[in-house]
Amino acid sequence: PPPGTVDASWDMKTGVRDQVNAMDGAAYFKLFADLMKNNPPAAEDAPMVAKLAKIGIVPGQDFDASKLDPAVAKGIAAAPKPAQDKIANLKEAIVTGDAKLDNGWMFFPHTGVYGTGYRNRALITWYGLGANRPQDAVYPTSEGPDLLKKYSGANKYVAHFNKGELPPANGFWSITMYDKDYFFVPNPINRYTVSSRSKFKANADGSIDLYFQKDSPGKDKESNWLPAPADEFVLMMRLYWPSEKSPSILDGTWKPPEVKEAS
Image 1 (spheres, helix red, strand yellow):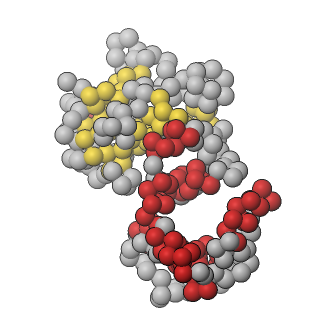
Image 2 (cartoon, rainbow, N blue to C red):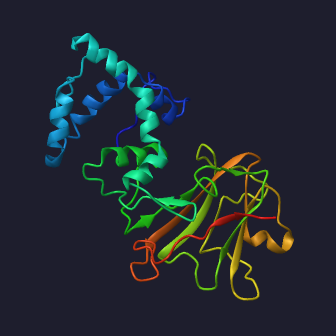
Image 3 (tube, rainbow, N blue to C red):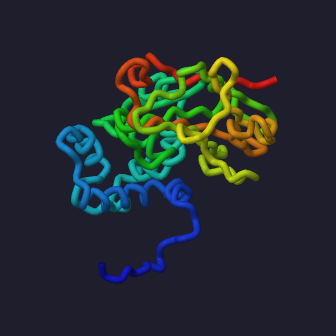
C-alpha cells in the first residue's frame, strides 16, 4: 500500500465521541451530506430522504445552512442536545420495543438489521459504534439492578447461574466490566472480562456465582471475580453465535440471571 499521510487539521487528542457530541447542528448535517456522497441511501429510505430535502439535505449535494430560512436554521442550531437525549434514552427504547429488559439486563433484538429504524441505529452507534446481527451476537447490558438504580463500587454484587444454565452460545460468551462511560476499568489483577474460557470455581451443587465488586471476595473466590471501580460501573454480556434452540436468549427461553446486591 502507498505510504499513509496525516492530516494535521484533524483533532487526534479529543475522543471521537466527544468530538461528535460537540458538533453544532449545521456542522453535523454538513458532514452528513458529505458522507452521503459515497454512502447513498437505500430505496426504503425514500420517505426520510424526502423529509430531509425540506431542510436542504440532498444526497450527492453539499449542505449550506446559510441558505436556509432563518427559522429552519434556528431549529437546526437548537437540535443537538434534545436529539442526543432522545437517542440515548434507554427507557424510551424499551417502550418502543427497540430494546428488551429481563432481570435488569437490556438487549436489542434488532441490531444490525435496522431497516428504517433510524433511532435504534443511532442508539446502537451512540453506545457501541455498530453491532452484529442477533444471530451472530447478542449484547445484554446492565447498568444497575433496575432502571432506577445504578451499580456502585461501594456495594458488592453476585450473579447466580444454576448448574447447566450458563449463557447458551455456540461460539463463546463473556461478561465485561466498564466504567459509567463504557470504558475499561483498571484493576489490580488486570481482569476486564470473565467468559466461557474462564476456569470458574463451582458450588457444591454445580451452580456458579460470579462476583462484581471493588475488593477481592477472598482468594478462594477470585477465579469468579470481576473487579469494579470505586464509583458507578456497567456490565455487558456477549453471546457470540447464540443458540437458536431452547434454551435461547433469542426467543426468551433463556434469560440472564439477576445481579443482586450481596449482604
